[in-house]
Length: 370
Image (cartoon, rainbow, N blue to C red):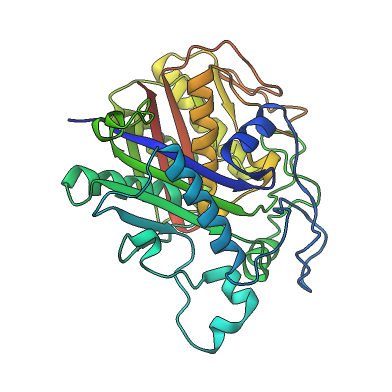
């Protein structure tokens, strides 16, 4: 079976536009989280957030503007001047907003849309709404589309902008941290919301190779599951089962690095750590580096998986494991290592990305460096 690769990645985060800016900030351990400057909903209570700086677009919703910037970068990174005929677009985020009076509400527009079909000439878009695991569910769908021969390439894309609805939904369950999020820290207090855009180009390796694009980031294994009985983010058994299924799909026993979902909540981070420890015990791993980007730029919700993939791609390509920004006093572990600063010199061939969301949405992706 031919390799399916991620040939292009694009990002907009609180570090600014571009994947390089994000990776530099992440490796330096910088924190882009602070009290909001633009977001001023009456419900806002001063939590640290990851806002995108710069001028605010007035012709399209910010979330769409961030997404388009990310798509443009991903397409350039894939060395495409135009998308191949038949390319499909998979959009991640809340379902598109129907036309009508609500579409004129700025908060509604930033929350749900509208997002037009026909973006970049790709025809009708598919929409994936799987909570914070949406981006990895979209990668799974993209892999099946390409395998089936339905399309030569798939662009996965989405954007998020700070808005009343998502802020309130996390605030009401007391999931937000007043100070910047500190995943895996014993003193962690909760989630910091971020905003931005993310995009991926997926295609067969031979297609990308013919035009000199990168073919070293192989989608080796995937598990995207629904576990509707419990809140997946705090269910150690569901998390470990999902990771195990992705490893099996990739045909490997373990990985050399794990980019965790870890948002900074007490229950979620603990469950993910316990699951990782369990997987390491099963395959004999004694020091698995594990880190998260959410203390640096915040939780990008539906598109958080793109930021996780970008961090993992950089680790695979450079051998440098990124730290978890804000991590001062790591949880005690036995087989998992939690770096507080960038660690160069690793030999990485396989790495995993975790994404877990409300409603029992959970996914794990295994990437291989070709």
